[in-house]
Image (cartoon, rainbow, N blue to C red; front, side, top):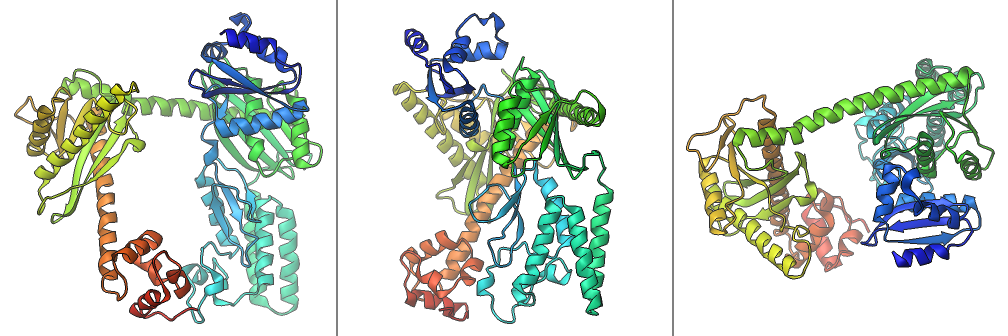
Length: 623
Protein backbone atom coordinates (compact mmCIF):
# COMPACT_ATOMS: atom_id res chain seq x y z
CA UNK A 1 0.00 0.00 0.00
CA UNK A 2 3.09 2.25 0.09
CA UNK A 3 2.63 3.23 -3.55
CA UNK A 4 -1.01 4.17 -2.85
CA UNK A 5 0.00 6.44 0.03
CA UNK A 6 2.53 8.14 -2.23
CA UNK A 7 -0.03 8.64 -5.00
CA UNK A 8 -2.57 10.04 -2.50
CA UNK A 9 -0.05 12.68 -1.39
CA UNK A 10 0.43 13.86 -4.96
CA UNK A 11 -3.24 14.12 -5.97
CA UNK A 12 -4.04 17.49 -7.57
CA UNK A 13 -6.72 19.85 -6.26
CA UNK A 14 -8.50 19.86 -9.65
CA UNK A 15 -11.71 18.48 -11.12
CA UNK A 16 -11.48 15.12 -12.85
CA UNK A 17 -12.38 11.44 -12.93
CA UNK A 18 -10.77 8.76 -10.75
CA UNK A 19 -10.54 5.08 -11.71
CA UNK A 20 -10.11 2.41 -9.03
CA UNK A 21 -8.48 -0.94 -9.91
CA UNK A 22 -8.03 -4.27 -8.13
CA UNK A 23 -4.97 -6.56 -8.02
CA UNK A 24 -5.81 -7.97 -11.47
CA UNK A 25 -5.80 -4.43 -12.92
CA UNK A 26 -9.56 -4.65 -13.52
CA UNK A 27 -11.55 -1.43 -13.13
CA UNK A 28 -13.88 -1.79 -10.14
CA UNK A 29 -15.13 1.79 -9.67
CA UNK A 30 -15.25 5.09 -11.56
CA UNK A 31 -16.19 8.43 -10.01
CA UNK A 32 -15.91 12.17 -10.58
CA UNK A 33 -14.82 14.96 -8.27
CA UNK A 34 -14.56 18.75 -8.11
CA UNK A 35 -11.34 18.16 -6.19
CA UNK A 36 -9.60 14.84 -6.84
CA UNK A 37 -7.35 15.46 -3.86
CA UNK A 38 -10.21 15.69 -1.36
CA UNK A 39 -12.56 13.09 -2.87
CA UNK A 40 -10.14 10.21 -3.42
CA UNK A 41 -8.50 10.64 0.00
CA UNK A 42 -11.90 10.23 1.67
CA UNK A 43 -12.00 6.58 0.63
CA UNK A 44 -8.82 5.76 2.55
CA UNK A 45 -9.68 7.63 5.75
CA UNK A 46 -11.73 6.15 8.64
CA UNK A 47 -14.15 3.54 7.35
CA UNK A 48 -16.74 4.29 10.05
CA UNK A 49 -18.58 6.68 7.76
CA UNK A 50 -18.54 4.28 4.82
CA UNK A 51 -21.37 1.89 3.95
CA UNK A 52 -20.72 -1.85 3.49
CA UNK A 53 -20.43 -1.55 -0.29
CA UNK A 54 -17.78 1.19 -0.12
CA UNK A 55 -15.83 -0.72 2.57
CA UNK A 56 -15.86 -3.82 0.37
CA UNK A 57 -14.73 -1.79 -2.65
CA UNK A 58 -11.90 -0.03 -0.75
CA UNK A 59 -10.60 -3.39 0.49
CA UNK A 60 -10.17 -4.44 -3.15
CA UNK A 61 -8.36 -1.28 -4.35
CA UNK A 62 -4.81 -2.06 -5.42
CA UNK A 63 -4.22 1.02 -7.57
CA UNK A 64 -5.99 4.04 -9.00
CA UNK A 65 -5.64 6.41 -11.91
CA UNK A 66 -7.15 9.81 -12.61
CA UNK A 67 -7.92 12.02 -15.59
CA UNK A 68 -7.91 15.81 -15.16
CA UNK A 69 -10.70 17.86 -16.73
CA UNK A 70 -11.23 21.59 -17.09
CA UNK A 71 -14.53 21.61 -15.18
CA UNK A 72 -16.90 19.51 -13.11
CA UNK A 73 -19.25 19.33 -16.11
CA UNK A 74 -16.51 17.79 -18.25
CA UNK A 75 -15.78 15.37 -15.40
CA UNK A 76 -19.44 14.29 -15.28
CA UNK A 77 -19.58 13.68 -19.04
CA UNK A 78 -16.35 11.67 -18.95
CA UNK A 79 -17.57 9.69 -15.92
CA UNK A 80 -20.82 8.78 -17.74
CA UNK A 81 -18.97 7.56 -20.82
CA UNK A 82 -16.37 5.55 -18.88
CA UNK A 83 -19.03 3.84 -16.73
CA UNK A 84 -20.98 2.88 -19.85
CA UNK A 85 -17.83 1.48 -21.46
CA UNK A 86 -16.36 -0.43 -18.48
CA UNK A 87 -19.43 -1.17 -16.28
CA UNK A 88 -17.37 -1.42 -13.08
CA UNK A 89 -18.48 -3.85 -10.41
CA UNK A 90 -19.03 -1.32 -7.63
CA UNK A 91 -20.80 1.40 -9.61
CA UNK A 92 -24.59 1.60 -9.52
CA UNK A 93 -25.58 0.16 -12.88
CA UNK A 94 -28.61 -0.09 -15.10
CA UNK A 95 -28.98 -3.83 -15.64
CA UNK A 96 -28.20 -4.80 -19.26
CA UNK A 97 -28.61 -1.21 -20.43
CA UNK A 98 -26.66 -2.04 -23.60
CA UNK A 99 -29.58 -4.19 -24.70
CA UNK A 100 -32.24 -1.50 -24.55
CA UNK A 101 -33.77 -1.26 -28.02
CA UNK A 102 -34.91 1.70 -30.12
CA UNK A 103 -37.43 2.37 -32.87
CA UNK A 104 -35.53 3.40 -35.98
CA UNK A 105 -36.96 5.40 -38.87
CA UNK A 106 -34.54 5.10 -41.81
CA UNK A 107 -35.09 8.60 -43.21
CA UNK A 108 -31.80 8.33 -45.12
CA UNK A 109 -33.47 5.91 -47.55
CA UNK A 110 -35.68 6.93 -50.48
CA UNK A 111 -38.55 4.94 -48.98
CA UNK A 112 -37.84 4.86 -45.23
CA UNK A 113 -38.64 1.89 -43.00
CA UNK A 114 -39.77 1.77 -39.36
CA UNK A 115 -37.91 -1.01 -37.56
CA UNK A 116 -36.54 -2.18 -34.21
CA UNK A 117 -32.85 -1.45 -33.62
CA UNK A 118 -30.49 -2.33 -30.77
CA UNK A 119 -27.78 0.13 -31.77
CA UNK A 120 -27.60 3.77 -32.76
CA UNK A 121 -25.62 4.10 -35.99
CA UNK A 122 -24.48 7.20 -37.84
CA UNK A 123 -26.73 6.52 -40.80
CA UNK A 124 -28.99 9.61 -40.96
CA UNK A 125 -31.82 7.65 -39.34
CA UNK A 126 -34.10 8.99 -36.60
CA UNK A 127 -34.17 6.96 -33.38
CA UNK A 128 -36.80 6.83 -30.64
CA UNK A 129 -36.08 5.38 -27.22
CA UNK A 130 -34.47 3.65 -25.47
CA UNK A 131 -37.25 1.27 -24.43
CA UNK A 132 -36.87 -1.31 -21.68
CA UNK A 133 -38.03 -4.22 -23.83
CA UNK A 134 -38.93 -5.34 -27.32
CA UNK A 135 -42.55 -6.05 -26.38
CA UNK A 136 -43.31 -2.33 -25.97
CA UNK A 137 -41.65 -1.62 -29.32
CA UNK A 138 -43.47 -4.42 -31.14
CA UNK A 139 -46.80 -3.23 -29.76
CA UNK A 140 -45.97 0.29 -30.98
CA UNK A 141 -44.91 -1.01 -34.40
CA UNK A 142 -48.18 -2.95 -34.66
CA UNK A 143 -50.13 0.29 -34.05
CA UNK A 144 -47.99 2.11 -36.63
CA UNK A 145 -48.59 -0.62 -39.24
CA UNK A 146 -52.34 -0.27 -38.78
CA UNK A 147 -52.27 3.53 -38.90
CA UNK A 148 -49.55 4.21 -41.46
CA UNK A 149 -48.79 1.94 -44.45
CA UNK A 150 -44.98 2.06 -44.31
CA UNK A 151 -42.64 -0.75 -45.27
CA UNK A 152 -40.66 -2.79 -42.74
CA UNK A 153 -38.87 -5.14 -45.18
CA UNK A 154 -35.16 -5.04 -46.09
CA UNK A 155 -35.82 -5.35 -49.81
CA UNK A 156 -33.44 -3.36 -52.01
CA UNK A 157 -35.83 -1.15 -53.97
CA UNK A 158 -33.09 -0.19 -56.45
CA UNK A 159 -32.96 -3.73 -57.85
CA UNK A 160 -36.69 -4.46 -58.11
CA UNK A 161 -37.68 -6.28 -61.31
CA UNK A 162 -40.61 -5.01 -63.33
CA UNK A 163 -43.81 -6.91 -62.65
CA UNK A 164 -42.61 -8.17 -59.25
CA UNK A 165 -45.50 -8.96 -56.92
CA UNK A 166 -45.69 -7.12 -53.59
CA UNK A 167 -45.80 -8.93 -50.26
CA UNK A 168 -48.80 -9.72 -48.06
CA UNK A 169 -48.60 -6.39 -46.18
CA UNK A 170 -49.51 -4.56 -49.40
CA UNK A 171 -52.69 -6.59 -49.81
CA UNK A 172 -53.82 -6.00 -46.21
CA UNK A 173 -53.16 -2.25 -46.55
CA UNK A 174 -50.22 -2.17 -44.14
CA UNK A 175 -47.72 -1.09 -46.81
CA UNK A 176 -48.09 1.21 -49.81
CA UNK A 177 -45.95 -1.15 -51.85
CA UNK A 178 -43.10 1.10 -53.00
CA UNK A 179 -41.63 -2.05 -54.57
CA UNK A 180 -44.43 -1.87 -57.14
CA UNK A 181 -43.61 1.74 -58.08
CA UNK A 182 -47.18 2.83 -57.29
CA UNK A 183 -46.28 5.51 -54.75
CA UNK A 184 -44.05 8.56 -55.25
CA UNK A 185 -41.25 9.45 -52.85
CA UNK A 186 -43.01 12.70 -51.94
CA UNK A 187 -46.29 10.98 -51.11
CA UNK A 188 -44.49 8.30 -49.11
CA UNK A 189 -42.53 10.98 -47.19
CA UNK A 190 -45.78 12.53 -45.97
CA UNK A 191 -46.67 9.22 -44.31
CA UNK A 192 -43.22 9.01 -42.69
CA UNK A 193 -43.67 12.54 -41.32
CA UNK A 194 -46.95 11.38 -39.75
CA UNK A 195 -45.14 8.41 -38.19
CA UNK A 196 -42.54 10.73 -36.65
CA UNK A 197 -45.26 13.01 -35.23
CA UNK A 198 -46.93 9.94 -33.72
CA UNK A 199 -43.68 8.68 -32.15
CA UNK A 200 -42.94 12.18 -30.82
CA UNK A 201 -46.32 12.17 -29.10
CA UNK A 202 -47.42 15.21 -31.11
CA UNK A 203 -50.92 13.89 -31.63
CA UNK A 204 -52.56 17.31 -31.94
CA UNK A 205 -50.15 18.26 -34.73
CA UNK A 206 -50.75 14.90 -36.40
CA UNK A 207 -54.54 15.27 -36.20
CA UNK A 208 -54.39 18.82 -37.56
CA UNK A 209 -52.27 17.66 -40.50
CA UNK A 210 -54.55 14.68 -41.23
CA UNK A 211 -57.70 16.81 -41.13
CA UNK A 212 -56.22 19.36 -43.57
CA UNK A 213 -55.25 16.57 -45.98
CA UNK A 214 -58.68 14.91 -45.63
CA UNK A 215 -60.38 18.18 -46.60
CA UNK A 216 -58.01 18.62 -49.56
CA UNK A 217 -58.77 15.12 -50.84
CA UNK A 218 -62.52 15.63 -50.38
CA UNK A 219 -62.36 18.93 -52.29
CA UNK A 220 -60.63 17.08 -55.14
CA UNK A 221 -63.42 14.46 -55.01
CA UNK A 222 -60.88 11.78 -54.01
CA UNK A 223 -63.40 10.30 -51.59
CA UNK A 224 -61.59 6.98 -51.09
CA UNK A 225 -58.41 8.74 -49.93
CA UNK A 226 -60.45 11.13 -47.78
CA UNK A 227 -62.20 8.17 -46.14
CA UNK A 228 -58.85 6.52 -45.47
CA UNK A 229 -57.59 9.70 -43.76
CA UNK A 230 -60.83 9.90 -41.76
CA UNK A 231 -60.21 6.34 -40.45
CA UNK A 232 -56.67 7.31 -39.43
CA UNK A 233 -58.03 10.37 -37.58
CA UNK A 234 -60.46 8.14 -35.67
CA UNK A 235 -57.66 5.70 -34.78
CA UNK A 236 -55.34 8.44 -33.51
CA UNK A 237 -58.19 9.91 -31.42
CA UNK A 238 -58.75 6.48 -29.86
CA UNK A 239 -55.06 6.32 -28.92
CA UNK A 240 -55.35 9.79 -27.37
CA UNK A 241 -58.45 8.77 -25.37
CA UNK A 242 -56.36 6.12 -23.60
CA UNK A 243 -53.85 8.73 -22.46
CA UNK A 244 -54.51 10.52 -19.24
CA UNK A 245 -54.14 14.30 -18.94
CA UNK A 246 -51.91 14.55 -15.88
CA UNK A 247 -50.31 17.99 -16.09
CA UNK A 248 -51.99 21.38 -16.33
CA UNK A 249 -48.70 22.86 -17.59
CA UNK A 250 -49.17 21.14 -20.98
CA UNK A 251 -45.38 20.75 -21.17
CA UNK A 252 -42.97 17.89 -21.78
CA UNK A 253 -41.90 16.30 -18.51
CA UNK A 254 -40.27 13.12 -17.22
CA UNK A 255 -41.29 11.89 -13.76
CA UNK A 256 -38.77 9.64 -11.96
CA UNK A 257 -39.38 7.70 -8.74
CA UNK A 258 -37.46 4.91 -7.04
CA UNK A 259 -38.41 1.93 -4.88
CA UNK A 260 -35.48 0.10 -3.29
CA UNK A 261 -34.89 -2.81 -0.96
CA UNK A 262 -31.57 -4.48 -0.08
CA UNK A 263 -29.45 -4.50 -3.27
CA UNK A 264 -32.28 -4.22 -5.79
CA UNK A 265 -34.04 -1.08 -7.00
CA UNK A 266 -36.77 -0.31 -9.51
CA UNK A 267 -36.97 3.06 -11.27
CA UNK A 268 -40.36 4.11 -12.61
CA UNK A 269 -40.23 6.66 -15.41
CA UNK A 270 -43.35 8.43 -16.73
CA UNK A 271 -43.19 10.24 -20.07
CA UNK A 272 -45.50 13.27 -20.13
CA UNK A 273 -45.78 15.03 -23.47
CA UNK A 274 -47.96 18.12 -23.91
CA UNK A 275 -49.46 17.43 -20.49
CA UNK A 276 -50.50 13.85 -21.31
CA UNK A 277 -49.05 10.63 -19.99
CA UNK A 278 -47.89 9.04 -23.25
CA UNK A 279 -45.82 6.18 -21.88
CA UNK A 280 -43.92 4.66 -18.98
CA UNK A 281 -40.89 2.46 -18.46
CA UNK A 282 -39.45 0.50 -15.55
CA UNK A 283 -35.73 -0.05 -15.06
CA UNK A 284 -34.01 -2.55 -12.77
CA UNK A 285 -30.98 -1.12 -10.97
CA UNK A 286 -28.23 -3.11 -9.31
CA UNK A 287 -27.83 -0.63 -6.45
CA UNK A 288 -25.89 -2.55 -3.83
CA UNK A 289 -26.47 -2.47 -0.07
CA UNK A 290 -26.70 0.79 1.82
CA UNK A 291 -26.81 3.15 -1.16
CA UNK A 292 -28.58 6.46 -0.65
CA UNK A 293 -31.71 6.93 -2.77
CA UNK A 294 -30.39 10.21 -4.14
CA UNK A 295 -27.18 8.52 -5.29
CA UNK A 296 -29.17 5.79 -7.06
CA UNK A 297 -31.38 8.40 -8.77
CA UNK A 298 -28.35 10.40 -9.87
CA UNK A 299 -26.58 7.33 -11.27
CA UNK A 300 -29.72 6.33 -13.16
CA UNK A 301 -30.15 9.79 -14.69
CA UNK A 302 -26.54 9.93 -15.86
CA UNK A 303 -26.74 6.51 -17.52
CA UNK A 304 -30.23 6.91 -18.97
CA UNK A 305 -29.92 10.41 -20.39
CA UNK A 306 -26.44 9.68 -21.78
CA UNK A 307 -28.14 7.75 -24.62
CA UNK A 308 -31.71 9.10 -24.44
CA UNK A 309 -32.69 10.69 -27.72
CA UNK A 310 -35.06 13.26 -26.21
CA UNK A 311 -34.72 15.33 -23.04
CA UNK A 312 -37.83 17.16 -21.81
CA UNK A 313 -37.92 20.68 -20.45
CA UNK A 314 -38.63 19.49 -16.90
CA UNK A 315 -37.62 16.41 -14.93
CA UNK A 316 -39.65 15.80 -11.77
CA UNK A 317 -37.77 13.82 -9.11
CA UNK A 318 -38.75 11.96 -5.97
CA UNK A 319 -35.88 13.58 -4.11
CA UNK A 320 -32.69 15.48 -4.81
CA UNK A 321 -29.77 13.52 -6.20
CA UNK A 322 -27.13 15.63 -4.47
CA UNK A 323 -25.85 16.46 -7.96
CA UNK A 324 -28.89 18.33 -9.28
CA UNK A 325 -27.06 21.52 -10.35
CA UNK A 326 -24.33 19.78 -12.35
CA UNK A 327 -26.74 17.19 -13.84
CA UNK A 328 -29.07 20.04 -14.80
CA UNK A 329 -26.22 21.89 -16.55
CA UNK A 330 -25.23 18.71 -18.38
CA UNK A 331 -28.78 17.99 -19.57
CA UNK A 332 -29.23 21.63 -20.63
CA UNK A 333 -26.04 21.43 -22.70
CA UNK A 334 -27.31 18.20 -24.36
CA UNK A 335 -30.77 19.63 -25.06
CA UNK A 336 -29.57 23.04 -26.17
CA UNK A 337 -32.00 24.83 -23.85
CA UNK A 338 -32.66 25.06 -20.12
CA UNK A 339 -33.67 21.82 -18.37
CA UNK A 340 -35.23 22.11 -14.92
CA UNK A 341 -34.89 19.47 -12.18
CA UNK A 342 -37.72 19.72 -9.62
CA UNK A 343 -38.43 17.96 -6.32
CA UNK A 344 -42.08 18.94 -5.65
CA UNK A 345 -43.37 19.21 -2.08
CA UNK A 346 -47.09 19.53 -2.86
CA UNK A 347 -49.65 19.80 -5.62
CA UNK A 348 -50.11 18.01 -8.94
CA UNK A 349 -46.42 17.28 -9.47
CA UNK A 350 -46.12 15.72 -6.01
CA UNK A 351 -49.10 13.49 -6.89
CA UNK A 352 -47.31 12.39 -10.08
CA UNK A 353 -44.21 11.40 -8.10
CA UNK A 354 -46.32 9.43 -5.63
CA UNK A 355 -48.09 7.63 -8.50
CA UNK A 356 -44.70 6.74 -10.01
CA UNK A 357 -43.43 5.54 -6.62
CA UNK A 358 -46.51 3.33 -6.17
CA UNK A 359 -45.88 1.72 -9.57
CA UNK A 360 -42.18 1.21 -8.73
CA UNK A 361 -43.08 -0.39 -5.37
CA UNK A 362 -45.53 -2.83 -6.95
CA UNK A 363 -42.95 -3.74 -9.61
CA UNK A 364 -40.32 -4.34 -6.89
CA UNK A 365 -42.72 -6.65 -4.99
CA UNK A 366 -43.34 -8.60 -8.21
CA UNK A 367 -39.59 -8.82 -8.85
CA UNK A 368 -39.01 -10.20 -5.34
CA UNK A 369 -41.73 -12.83 -5.80
CA UNK A 370 -40.29 -13.77 -9.17
CA UNK A 371 -36.83 -14.17 -7.62
CA UNK A 372 -38.23 -16.46 -4.91
CA UNK A 373 -39.93 -18.65 -7.52
CA UNK A 374 -36.82 -18.62 -9.73
CA UNK A 375 -34.63 -19.66 -6.81
CA UNK A 376 -37.02 -22.52 -6.03
CA UNK A 377 -36.89 -23.87 -9.62
CA UNK A 378 -33.08 -23.53 -9.91
CA UNK A 379 -31.06 -23.78 -6.68
CA UNK A 380 -34.02 -25.27 -4.79
CA UNK A 381 -34.51 -27.84 -7.55
CA UNK A 382 -30.82 -28.81 -7.32
CA UNK A 383 -31.22 -29.37 -3.57
CA UNK A 384 -34.28 -31.57 -4.14
CA UNK A 385 -32.46 -33.52 -6.84
CA UNK A 386 -29.51 -34.21 -4.52
CA UNK A 387 -31.93 -35.45 -1.85
CA UNK A 388 -33.96 -37.68 -4.19
CA UNK A 389 -30.87 -39.30 -5.77
CA UNK A 390 -28.75 -39.33 -2.60
CA UNK A 391 -25.95 -37.36 -4.29
CA UNK A 392 -22.80 -36.56 -2.27
CA UNK A 393 -23.19 -32.79 -2.89
CA UNK A 394 -25.79 -30.45 -4.31
CA UNK A 395 -24.77 -30.27 -7.99
CA UNK A 396 -23.80 -26.70 -8.90
CA UNK A 397 -22.72 -27.69 -12.44
CA UNK A 398 -24.67 -30.27 -14.44
CA UNK A 399 -23.58 -31.40 -17.91
CA UNK A 400 -26.01 -33.19 -20.22
CA UNK A 401 -25.23 -35.14 -23.42
CA UNK A 402 -27.51 -36.03 -26.34
CA UNK A 403 -27.05 -37.67 -29.74
CA UNK A 404 -28.83 -36.59 -32.94
CA UNK A 405 -28.80 -38.23 -36.39
CA UNK A 406 -31.02 -39.14 -39.33
CA UNK A 407 -30.66 -42.86 -40.12
CA UNK A 408 -27.05 -42.60 -39.00
CA UNK A 409 -26.06 -39.70 -41.26
CA UNK A 410 -24.50 -36.53 -39.87
CA UNK A 411 -24.37 -37.95 -36.35
CA UNK A 412 -23.71 -35.18 -33.85
CA UNK A 413 -23.70 -34.77 -30.08
CA UNK A 414 -24.43 -31.87 -27.79
CA UNK A 415 -23.12 -30.97 -24.37
CA UNK A 416 -25.16 -28.41 -22.49
CA UNK A 417 -24.23 -26.99 -19.09
CA UNK A 418 -26.46 -25.70 -16.30
CA UNK A 419 -24.93 -23.69 -13.47
CA UNK A 420 -26.99 -23.40 -10.29
CA UNK A 421 -30.05 -24.51 -12.21
CA UNK A 422 -29.67 -22.04 -15.10
CA UNK A 423 -28.27 -22.50 -18.64
CA UNK A 424 -24.62 -21.50 -19.02
CA UNK A 425 -24.65 -21.12 -22.80
CA UNK A 426 -21.05 -19.99 -23.11
CA UNK A 427 -20.10 -23.49 -21.89
CA UNK A 428 -22.22 -25.39 -24.44
CA UNK A 429 -20.21 -27.61 -26.78
CA UNK A 430 -21.09 -29.58 -29.92
CA UNK A 431 -19.37 -32.59 -31.49
CA UNK A 432 -19.45 -34.28 -34.89
CA UNK A 433 -19.38 -38.04 -34.38
CA UNK A 434 -16.57 -39.69 -36.33
CA UNK A 435 -16.34 -43.16 -37.85
CA UNK A 436 -19.76 -44.60 -36.97
CA UNK A 437 -21.81 -46.45 -39.57
CA UNK A 438 -25.57 -46.19 -39.22
CA UNK A 439 -27.55 -45.04 -36.18
CA UNK A 440 -25.37 -46.34 -33.30
CA UNK A 441 -26.26 -44.26 -30.24
CA UNK A 442 -24.15 -46.38 -27.86
CA UNK A 443 -20.93 -45.98 -29.85
CA UNK A 444 -21.69 -42.30 -30.43
CA UNK A 445 -22.26 -41.69 -26.70
CA UNK A 446 -19.06 -43.54 -25.83
CA UNK A 447 -17.12 -41.36 -28.28
CA UNK A 448 -18.46 -38.02 -27.08
CA UNK A 449 -17.99 -38.81 -23.37
CA UNK A 450 -14.42 -39.96 -24.06
CA UNK A 451 -13.58 -36.88 -26.16
CA UNK A 452 -15.06 -34.49 -23.62
CA UNK A 453 -13.26 -35.90 -20.55
CA UNK A 454 -9.94 -36.78 -22.22
CA UNK A 455 -9.68 -33.20 -23.42
CA UNK A 456 -10.83 -31.84 -20.06
CA UNK A 457 -8.26 -33.86 -18.08
CA UNK A 458 -5.43 -32.95 -20.46
CA UNK A 459 -6.36 -29.27 -20.29
CA UNK A 460 -6.59 -29.40 -16.50
CA UNK A 461 -3.08 -30.92 -16.20
CA UNK A 462 -1.65 -28.33 -18.60
CA UNK A 463 -3.17 -25.38 -16.74
CA UNK A 464 -1.95 -26.71 -13.40
CA UNK A 465 1.55 -27.17 -14.84
CA UNK A 466 1.50 -23.57 -16.09
CA UNK A 467 0.37 -22.32 -12.67
CA UNK A 468 -3.02 -21.17 -14.01
CA UNK A 469 -6.51 -21.68 -12.63
CA UNK A 470 -7.51 -25.22 -13.75
CA UNK A 471 -11.16 -24.17 -13.96
CA UNK A 472 -10.54 -21.46 -16.57
CA UNK A 473 -10.19 -23.71 -19.62
CA UNK A 474 -12.82 -24.63 -22.19
CA UNK A 475 -13.14 -28.21 -20.91
CA UNK A 476 -11.06 -28.35 -17.74
CA UNK A 477 -13.86 -27.61 -15.27
CA UNK A 478 -15.53 -30.92 -14.51
CA UNK A 479 -19.23 -31.30 -13.63
CA UNK A 480 -20.81 -32.21 -10.30
CA UNK A 481 -23.35 -34.37 -12.14
CA UNK A 482 -23.55 -35.90 -15.64
CA UNK A 483 -26.93 -36.42 -17.30
CA UNK A 484 -27.20 -38.84 -20.24
CA UNK A 485 -30.24 -38.74 -22.51
CA UNK A 486 -31.37 -42.36 -22.79
CA UNK A 487 -31.85 -45.50 -20.79
CA UNK A 488 -29.69 -48.03 -18.97
CA UNK A 489 -27.66 -48.90 -22.09
CA UNK A 490 -26.44 -45.35 -22.71
CA UNK A 491 -25.74 -44.96 -18.99
CA UNK A 492 -23.57 -48.12 -18.89
CA UNK A 493 -21.52 -46.87 -21.85
CA UNK A 494 -20.83 -43.57 -20.08
CA UNK A 495 -19.97 -45.28 -16.77
CA UNK A 496 -17.48 -47.55 -18.57
CA UNK A 497 -15.63 -44.57 -20.09
CA UNK A 498 -15.59 -42.60 -16.83
CA UNK A 499 -14.21 -45.63 -14.97
CA UNK A 500 -11.50 -46.09 -17.59
CA UNK A 501 -10.49 -42.41 -17.30
CA UNK A 502 -10.60 -42.63 -13.46
CA UNK A 503 -13.25 -39.92 -13.13
CA UNK A 504 -16.03 -42.28 -12.07
CA UNK A 505 -16.25 -40.33 -8.79
CA UNK A 506 -18.48 -37.91 -10.75
CA UNK A 507 -22.12 -39.00 -10.34
CA UNK A 508 -23.78 -39.94 -13.63
CA UNK A 509 -27.44 -40.63 -14.34
CA UNK A 510 -29.61 -41.14 -17.41
CA UNK A 511 -33.15 -39.97 -18.08
CA UNK A 512 -35.38 -42.08 -20.35
CA UNK A 513 -37.95 -39.88 -22.05
CA UNK A 514 -40.82 -42.39 -22.40
CA UNK A 515 -41.75 -42.62 -18.71
CA UNK A 516 -39.25 -40.05 -17.35
CA UNK A 517 -37.36 -42.86 -15.60
CA UNK A 518 -34.03 -42.09 -13.95
CA UNK A 519 -31.28 -44.73 -14.01
CA UNK A 520 -28.22 -44.73 -11.77
CA UNK A 521 -25.19 -47.06 -11.83
CA UNK A 522 -25.91 -48.25 -8.28
CA UNK A 523 -29.52 -49.35 -8.82
CA UNK A 524 -30.81 -51.94 -11.25
CA UNK A 525 -34.34 -50.59 -11.27
CA UNK A 526 -35.31 -47.14 -12.44
CA UNK A 527 -35.83 -44.37 -9.92
CA UNK A 528 -39.28 -42.82 -10.23
CA UNK A 529 -39.63 -39.25 -8.98
CA UNK A 530 -43.08 -37.60 -8.80
CA UNK A 531 -43.81 -35.41 -11.83
CA UNK A 532 -44.38 -32.33 -9.67
CA UNK A 533 -40.93 -32.66 -8.09
CA UNK A 534 -38.77 -29.60 -8.88
CA UNK A 535 -35.66 -31.78 -9.17
CA UNK A 536 -37.22 -33.93 -11.91
CA UNK A 537 -38.48 -30.81 -13.68
CA UNK A 538 -34.93 -29.42 -13.66
CA UNK A 539 -33.62 -32.64 -15.23
CA UNK A 540 -36.34 -32.45 -17.89
CA UNK A 541 -35.40 -28.86 -18.77
CA UNK A 542 -31.73 -29.80 -19.07
CA UNK A 543 -32.50 -32.92 -21.15
CA UNK A 544 -34.81 -30.94 -23.46
CA UNK A 545 -32.18 -28.22 -23.91
CA UNK A 546 -29.53 -30.82 -24.81
CA UNK A 547 -31.94 -32.31 -27.34
CA UNK A 548 -32.74 -28.87 -28.83
CA UNK A 549 -29.07 -27.92 -29.11
CA UNK A 550 -28.11 -31.25 -30.76
CA UNK A 551 -31.03 -31.05 -33.18
CA UNK A 552 -30.20 -27.46 -34.16
CA UNK A 553 -26.59 -28.45 -34.90
CA UNK A 554 -27.71 -31.49 -36.87
CA UNK A 555 -30.12 -29.42 -38.97
CA UNK A 556 -27.42 -26.86 -39.76
CA UNK A 557 -25.08 -29.59 -41.02
CA UNK A 558 -27.87 -31.26 -42.97
CA UNK A 559 -28.75 -27.93 -44.58
CA UNK A 560 -25.14 -27.31 -45.58
CA UNK A 561 -24.89 -30.80 -47.05
CA UNK A 562 -28.02 -30.16 -49.14
CA UNK A 563 -26.57 -26.90 -50.42
CA UNK A 564 -23.24 -28.59 -51.16
CA UNK A 565 -24.94 -31.43 -53.09
CA UNK A 566 -26.80 -28.91 -55.29
CA UNK A 567 -23.63 -26.92 -55.91
CA UNK A 568 -21.83 -30.11 -56.97
CA UNK A 569 -24.12 -30.28 -60.02
CA UNK A 570 -23.08 -26.83 -61.30
CA UNK A 571 -20.27 -26.71 -63.90
CA UNK A 572 -17.09 -24.78 -63.00
CA UNK A 573 -17.90 -24.95 -59.25
CA UNK A 574 -15.28 -27.05 -57.49
CA UNK A 575 -14.70 -27.73 -53.74
CA UNK A 576 -12.96 -24.41 -53.03
CA UNK A 577 -15.65 -22.37 -54.75
CA UNK A 578 -18.38 -24.37 -52.99
CA UNK A 579 -16.80 -23.55 -49.64
CA UNK A 580 -16.51 -19.86 -50.56
CA UNK A 581 -20.16 -19.71 -51.69
CA UNK A 582 -21.35 -21.52 -48.56
CA UNK A 583 -19.38 -19.18 -46.32
CA UNK A 584 -20.65 -16.04 -48.05
CA UNK A 585 -24.31 -16.88 -48.74
CA UNK A 586 -25.24 -19.67 -46.30
CA UNK A 587 -28.32 -20.78 -48.28
CA UNK A 588 -29.47 -21.71 -51.78
CA UNK A 589 -32.11 -18.97 -51.62
CA UNK A 590 -29.43 -16.33 -51.05
CA UNK A 591 -27.38 -17.66 -53.97
CA UNK A 592 -30.48 -17.71 -56.18
CA UNK A 593 -31.24 -14.06 -55.25
CA UNK A 594 -27.72 -12.84 -56.06
CA UNK A 595 -26.52 -11.25 -59.29
CA UNK A 596 -23.56 -11.72 -61.61
CA UNK A 597 -21.43 -8.98 -60.06
CA UNK A 598 -21.97 -10.24 -56.53
CA UNK A 599 -21.17 -13.85 -57.47
CA UNK A 600 -18.05 -12.98 -59.47
CA UNK A 601 -16.75 -10.79 -56.64
CA UNK A 602 -16.52 -13.67 -54.17
CA UNK A 603 -13.05 -14.94 -53.36
CA UNK A 604 -12.00 -17.63 -55.88
CA UNK A 605 -14.87 -16.92 -58.29
CA UNK A 606 -14.76 -15.36 -61.75
CA UNK A 607 -17.40 -14.25 -64.27
CA UNK A 608 -17.36 -17.60 -66.07
CA UNK A 609 -18.13 -19.52 -62.87
CA UNK A 610 -20.71 -16.92 -61.86
CA UNK A 611 -22.46 -17.27 -65.24
CA UNK A 612 -22.62 -21.04 -64.68
CA UNK A 613 -24.61 -20.44 -61.49
CA UNK A 614 -26.86 -17.88 -63.18
CA UNK A 615 -27.55 -20.34 -66.04
CA UNK A 616 -28.08 -23.29 -63.69
CA UNK A 617 -30.82 -21.50 -61.74
CA UNK A 618 -32.34 -20.04 -64.93
CA UNK A 619 -31.73 -16.46 -63.80
CA UNK A 620 -31.36 -13.42 -65.98
CA UNK A 621 -27.92 -11.86 -65.99
CA UNK A 622 -27.94 -8.58 -64.04
CA UNK A 623 -24.95 -6.68 -65.34
